[in-house]
Length: 136
Image (cartoon, rainbow, N blue to C red; front, side, top):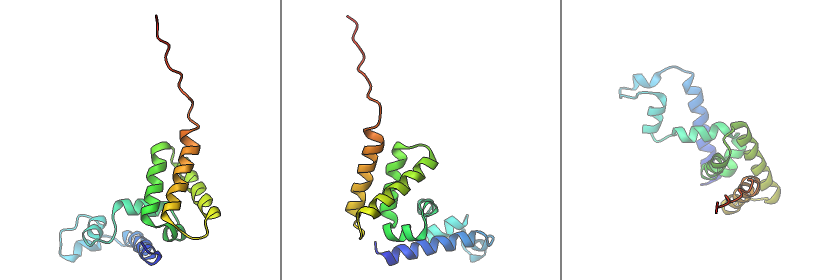
């Protein structure tokens, strides 16, 4: 997805947050919309998952990495970290690591950085379980 498309998605989400404060205008549109989210989803503008991703990242980060890569980042970290504050720290560490290593964006390299981080910080750091001793 292009940076322009990412910017547009981010702008739509910011419009959503502004519209949410304006009351229930969608009820006056003559269709049976249950909520602002229902209105936006039926118009193909934005969905709940995208809003959740947008809430985690600033405009620059969202526009640079895009929805797909940031979704992959969020899912990868959620699998191994249950604490939301620690997840945010992980997101930041991964983004900083990527930006320090690469000057231009490549989704393949970003995915590699995420996987290496998860492996280093979570997989290899888990305490090794000792096998149970069989009773003879």
